[in-house]
Length: 217
Image (cartoon, rainbow, N blue to C red):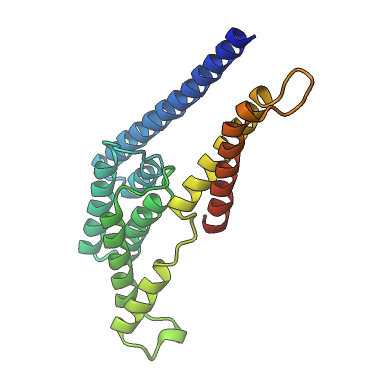
């Protein structure tokens, strides 16, 4: 019985590793493809098409991605070129695409916090430099920029640490319950505490992590 269980465990591990490898490969493929399309459109002078593909490339970012810096640089170059051409809406769109692309990353821990903060500052500056809506008519440009920057700082996405605790806690909880069901009971269905102790406490710890993550995510 035990060799069979061990083989099943190995098969589960192989399946999990295969899924991770497949997801990683898809992420790399998509990020590189979107970046290449963006660069091709930019070289042909189609900045708005390039902007969309740069943003998509950022959304497919992953840990230690070699493509994030190039996508950030491409969007910044479009934004600065648009501002030099006195096309404020296009410059705003490029900076917003940069900030939004990094915020929408498939990976919870954004690798380019500095670039995102720079984009927020430029967005606030450009908004303040333009015509103010009626509600802001009596405010100076510095106040408008500060208030817009405050709005940009509001995070709607899950907190990285909370989200990680939630996901990993849930996975560990399910795995611990499976181990408890297999190892913690004898053939008649009675609890065998010496072998049930480890998976039981592991399940409790994992559920606690999941609950904490659910609160703070």
